[in-house]
Every structure is written in C-alpha cells, then in structure tokens.
Amino acid sequence: MLSSPKVLKQEIMLRVLYSLIPVGVVAVYFFGWCIASVIAVSMIFAFLTEWVMASLRKGKISYACFVTAGIYALSLPPTTPLWIVTVGIIIAILFAKEMFGGFGKNVFNPAIVGRGFVFVCFPIELTGRFVPVFTGFPGGFGHWSMAGLEQTPQFIAEAGLKVVDAITAATPMWTNRDYGFTSSIVSLFLGNIGTIFEYEGKKMVLAAGSAGEVSALVILLSGAYLLWTKTANWRLTLSTLLGAIISSLVFRYAFGIRTVPPPLFTLFSGALFYAAVFMVTDPVSAPKVTLSQWIYGFFIGTMIVVFRSKSIFAGGAAFSILLGNILAPSLDLWISRMKSPEKGTAPDSKGVVSP
Image (cartoon, rainbow, N blue to C red; front, side, top):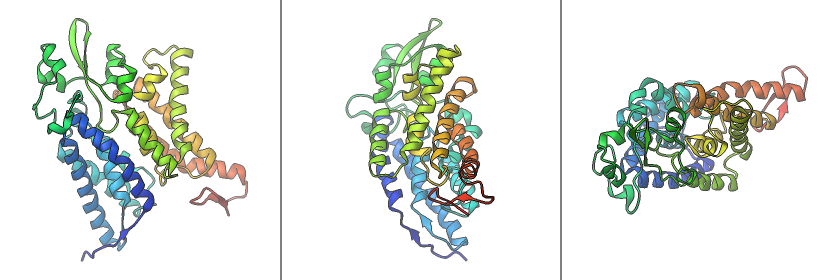
C-alpha cells in the first residue's frame, strides 16, 4: 500500500530552478506557449514517478526531480509531442535515479538519460521538425507554437516558401556541417535564429534547435547566478568550455578537419553552453576530486566536438555527458590512489580521501 512520502527540501535545487526561469521565459518568447506545456508535463510526470517510487521505498521526494524535469524539458526541440516528453521523463526518473536508490545514488545524470533515450528512440520526431524562432513583439508570447501553423514568419513568406519548409529546416550545426552555411555569431549569441540561405540553387530555412539552448546570452546570465551563489562548480563549467574550444582549434587548424567549425561557432551553437551550465555540473554524477573535475569537463567538451564532427547526429552533448558519467567514478578512484597509495582509499562526498 502506498504511503504519502515527505518532501526533502533542498535549497541548492531551488536555486537551480530559479536559474531555469529566465531560460524558460525566453524559450516561450522564441517558440510560443507550447514550451510551457512541455515544462508542465515534464514536471508533473517527474513528480508522479518519484512519488510512487518514494512511497514504495518509504523514502522522500526530492526537489531534484523538478530540476531534472526542467533541464530535460528545455533540452527538447519545441515541437516535441507531449507523449514523448512523458516517456522521456519517466525513463529519466525511474531508470536513471530510482533504480539506483533515489537522490544522491544515481550514477548517470537523469535528465541526460531521458534526453538520450527519446533522441535515439524517436529520431524523426526529435530531429525532423525544427523551426525558426519568433521575433519582434510579442514574439512567441502571442502564439501557441510554430508547429500549430498559427503564423508564418515574414522572412519565410517573402522567400515564397511554405510553412512545412520551415518545419523541416535544419539547425545551425546541421547547416554548417552538411551545407557549409555558417550562422551569424551574434544571432547564435542572442538567439535570433532564422534566415534563408541557398544550397545548390535551393532555398533553405535556418531553424533553431532545442528550446533552452537557443540564446547563449541568457544561459550565460543564469550560469553567472549559479556560480555567484556557489550552486554550480565553476571548474566543471570552465573545463567543459575549454575542452570544446581547445579541441576545435586543434582539430580544425592543426589536423585540418574542416567539418569542425571555428571555436566561436563551436562555443555558441547547439547545446554546449546549456550542457556546461546545467548538465555537466550535476553534483551527484560528476567527480568529487578537483583534478578529476578538470579532466571530466575537458573530456566532455572534447567529445562534444568529436560527436558533432563525426556522428550521424549533429549534436553530441547528451552522449558526451553519459560517457563522462561512466568515467567519473574511475577518475576519482585513480586520482585518489595516486595521492594516497594506501589500498582501499576513496574520496568521500566532498572529495576528501579517507581510508
């Protein structure tokens, strides 16, 4: 029989939720009120899944389930069907968190597991309906969504394209890698993504990616709040960005791999900023030892560049972080043993080695 579990209050998780608010508001401006429904559905089913499992194991519901739901929801494309949103968040909470015993015991970042699961299982729905952003006033605040065909952006109408052409448009990373079109850095930084370009005589539409990754400026401000309040570990964020920048420089200019874009494009396009601020910094799945954190972040940043260049999917943040999650416990163990050769030593939750 299910009992009513108590709620584990976590101030640090509340601060992460506060930092997601501006990202969510801007996502609504760019894509419409459908984003609010995606976030709401994600949080409702995250809570229900954790409530059921916490009742069975006689544990507590953590605020972390809402953080997972928010990060997961904003990592999805704005046209993601709500049933896919539901499937992904249930998988995230149930198999990436509760199966390990609940909050603080998971090996993998739950939001990333949910995002990776739906990305692999439903690739057409997740990658085949990208849309350009709304601009001007009131932007998306005056519309439900671009997927509802409620408004055709002016630049699409002037180009003589149909709305369906916009829905099947490609994101900046896809267009750069597959069509050789490089988006404006200013547009990527602000989030004003949507223009017409030509490829082999055919007009194509540049579209935005996932809802929360569009504006690097807003993510940067939210990240500054997390770092200022010491909610996020600055080493994890910085090392991830350094890994991506340095590897893009080496691969593009030293090795001559032209499918790797320039460093600034690498930095501001796709989910790199979003991942470095909200995902890599997960305190549970990240390493605890300082040197491990530098290696961990650098590894993830490098793998993002590799996946973007060589994989079938142009984005690689989710898979890179999952690989990092696998590596994290071993990194802590190896580095702890290097510092303290005694057999059986390991870092505690604060990264301190004790027998």
